[in-house]
Length: 278
Image 1: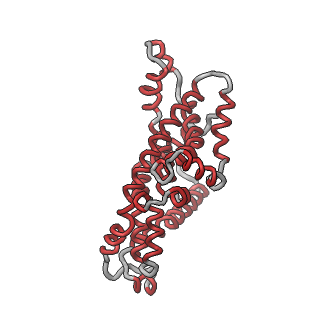
Image 2: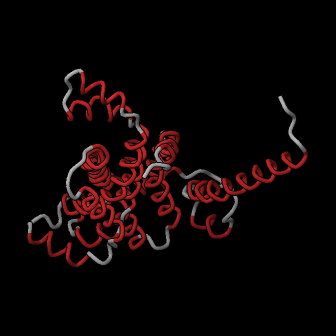
Image 3: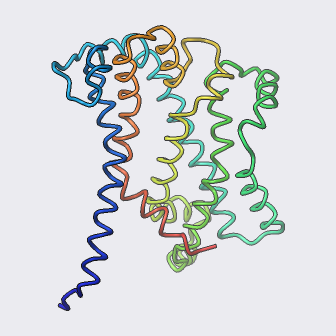
């Protein structure tokens, strides 16, 4: 094994120090938020950066009772259905655009990918009127349908790039054995595409879990509000009890943090595997 030169060691040391500093910059605010949720209001303002003298678990219990717990189920419902529909629609579209030759294929691709240029803020009034017209305003569908519509373009772009990187020999063998296009897609392509499926699901879940603007405008019923709106209500009702609000923020962030940790390998593989394909 060749020994590293002095310059290579210096370079590796600089890279290690830089990424260590970057990790601290990301982890420390999250750690501070979780620990601050255990403090009293006096400790939070007087000893902002110190550890809590006594861990007040009741802050988390109160946050769950008055805000997070009430809207947690709504966020899970909206996120799960948004992820499932986005993955299903995008996978079918991406497979068709990457494998089949048909007229106007490039036009369809440009139209779908062109959806990346649409800003949610620009379409807010039009969406509001459409939801009222179809009678789904102030329902779960009022959030799920716009979320899916705005996530499909990017997800199709990711999946198509990944599908293009898959070897076609396996699919051709399946066609020779008598499999149809749907069986090839469902039993061969999708199992081979677990990294990009996990990546797309994670990115879509993060978007729908944290989205605020559509939830604020399209939902009026308090029983249908998601976690971001619940946290806003906590701030309005408990303007002086910041430890409880921080506890609510910590509880709302915890599912996405756990999900990211569990699927981080698939996320990296999915983002890099098809990056060289067009």
